Amino acid sequence: DLNPAAADFLTARPRQNLFLAMAASLVLVALILYVQRAQQRHAELTRLAELGQMSAVLAHEIRNPLGALKGFLQLAHERSSGDSRLWLDESIEQTSRLERLVRDLLLYARVPQVKSKPVRWQEMEHRLKPHAPGVAFTAADFSWNTDPDLLEQVLLNLLRNAREAGTEVRVEAEPGRIRIFDNGPGLPPEVRARLFQPFFTTKAQGTGLGLAIARNLTRALGGRLSLRDQSPSGTCAEIQWSTRA
Image (cartoon, helix red, strand yellow):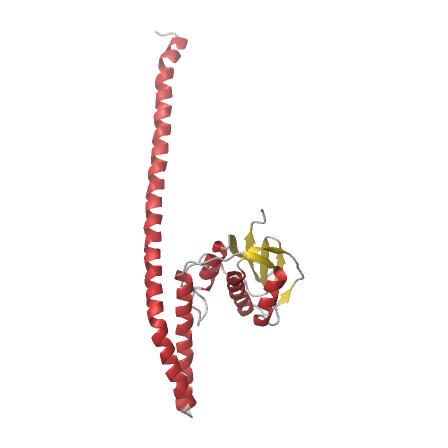
């Protein structure tokens, strides 16, 4: 019979080797899973990039003949009357809808060209107010570096969504954060999970690209866009960015 101390001494090294082998196996499994997910993500991004390029080409090719078609419809509308005018009204409306879809496709597929410069919040407020009647802006005065044209696109999109969702909309801004509040019904869980998914929309006339474009532009500006429910009701759209020099 071996002395217990001697038995422990003889089995210590094999136990260590066994633990090392188990740890290495776990690390290897984790690496395999990571590589598989990375490959799947890469394949998904490749498909999305190809889809974006195809959408941009199609949108560009459609835009010119669509503009010509709308021009002829408007000319016919001016020279018509009665039921013909009503039918042409609907045709022009649907053509305008296609124009919005083409425009959003081009915006979504295009890589934003950021031209940052010092901007004061009061300047942005002055840009937004003509397009946002009835929206309350809280007093704020600060400046930071951003692209005012791209930021205006983002904020107008969020303001349009807020005004469609509720009857009261307000904007609060401070260094590093801009928030847009509405008093609408809020975001159902199934909608919240797909908010930024391209072509997902709950609107009858929506393209489903507005929030996806807003998120892409916000990222290009170095910020982060999020939406969350408010208590007791309503939604808050928030843009955050770093204020570090």
